[in-house]
Length: 458
Ligand code: UDX
Ligand code: UDX
Image (cartoon, rainbow, N blue to C red):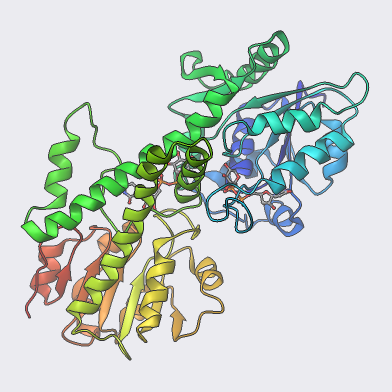
């Protein structure tokens, strides 16, 4: 079959692969190929056990794979063979040298640019999908513009706003698609080409355009605003615990103001995930780099409150369990950074588990999807850790339950049965405020929610 467009994506991660699967699904006449330096990952995308759990993803991959969606290890030939190249390689926080622990590590990004330059034999549109510091496209362009002869590269920015767990819906019905380009003749032409792809299933009024730098910055700022809301409500949860105000009631009252809105006002143990912390630190670094110290410290406080919330949670467990956890069994319910994903990157569960172990508690970790990743996150850490998928078995014989992920499954547990199997007095720390606290209290638990009064028999 002759395909109308040939699209490549470099980077088969949480962002690259699902977004390409959606393009292939919506545009059966386009050929979409995804490559990755990690061969195991490509094998997994070609197998029945996809490397990423995301509701609805498997159906779309099964429908398109082998028809117009391909996962390949041959990066060189795929670069040669495709006209439109998305780049979705990871851009972790730098761990060394200038900007360590703040700036984005762009080494993979630059390597990819050089690979594109090396193997290209014709002009191409190169699209930044990864979240990047402002002006990264400039570096990309400088590398690519050293191409010899008539080959020309046009760099676009097209950040991805999807969230994990709802990725398929977000990709199918996004709030907006943002395309940044140079406002030159060739830049505008490339922009129209990319708009043409999204216009196959997204209304034109939702496809917005801007200059390259606004597009790059918008993605960082969108994540910073979302994270800032979480830190704002979490900071108020601490005040609620001191004043007998209830954080759920406060969030409801505040969120009903249509200027504020009710989303991202759920108090908990803090945000996790691969993006929020990394992107804010990146923003902080950019501000400092440009000498904007006050702006930098404003955004840095969002990350500080997130850490504070986790420390507060641990202190609460320790203080209420008579100041010692040594030898006690704590059942950790949920390790994923949020519900409906197997992803554990930057999950608050990592820090909280480490602290429980540091207090010499024995921890039994349960999660419906993330146990494999949990074991990887905690590998090499000393202490007594068990991984038990079944919640009831995990909780049996424990002194406390600690809810760290908002899995729906936890709302429907038979807490009477769990209570009977636990050591008394039984403690329940709900780090996500998802269960019926009054009911659990009436069963006999000592219940400690976030941002509301504890319900205890002690
Ligand atoms: C990543 C970044 O975290 C995010 O900021 C960005 O917006 C998109 O890329 P994600 O897809 O979640 O998000 O990352 P990850 O699952 O780590 O996928 C990146 C993939 O790129 C990995 O599979 C890695 O093997 C691959 N890669 C990395 C390459 O193919 N080539 C490289 O040179 C480096
Ligand atoms: C985020 C952005 O939402 C998305 O647009 C971007 O493309 C990538 O980063 P993601 O990290 O997948 O997506 O998850 P998100 O739903 O934003 O949640 C992030 C964290 O904040 C989770 O740990 C979640 O539990 C927490 N959170 C979210 C809260 O604690 N309270 C809330 O009200 C909302």
